[in-house]
Image 1 (cartoon, helix red, strand yellow):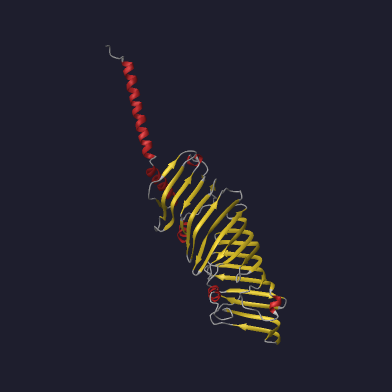
Image 2 (cartoon, rainbow, N blue to C red):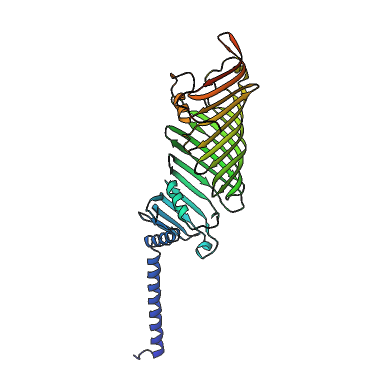
Length: 381
């Protein structure tokens, strides 16, 4: 048998080398794309660019069709500067279009978070330490969805949070829905919110519809709110001005409508100017002739102080020639409302002025009554 020609042997050698190279390349690609290794690489690069430490625990997974999608179990995000927890999630499911991966516009198709926990104080500290940069609205082609989340801040927390934002893109309207439970001290509120934003960004017109219940023994108090206005976020804080606001709740919650302004900064400033539709039946009874005037009362409320509402609230009520100017603390009023067997008068400092008043068949003309409980301090602005 004659030996194979030299050219034929060389061809087989080249084919064997090429096959070996293909196998080596396939091994290397498989090793680089092994889910644990790929996830760790992605989180390491993302964390380095954001000054965050990102880690996970469990078996991640990924797919490439129809677009890259990474599922990260037990995601933990910490501030690299102090190691404090910023965000965690039982599962993070992130989808990215190929264009973003190949260097195009930074677009995220969708983010899904299962049992996320966000710590707002850590988030604010991390943001304050970041280099100044122009605001850039992220693009979420199919939005973000969070299930059974928790948001923690100083003095309050939101639990059982479900949040859905179907789409977010610059210069396009956006809508979002949220439900959950807000807790601050003894105050617990279950809520459902449906919001829309005209042009998402640092400033925009918006509308909001909310319903829920204030948890109170023996029966929760249901409420509904409807408002439209404009918000603006600056270095000084977040300001919100409503063109219209209506609120209606089970007594002793009021029914009212008007306009409001809120500034959330180092301190909280809030005001309401409108109409109290009627006098809630669970509020203290008014002496004659005030019950005849206890509908559509002019109402002005203002607050300036701690974001936990521990400072005095100032209130002005007026109808015809009768007016009430009062100062109160929210915690005192809540305690009084929760104690039916307590004093008949609420814990507030007030001045009542009316042309006439009737008490036990006695008519008084040109009356001015002042109440000054020792525990209420503060002067109206």
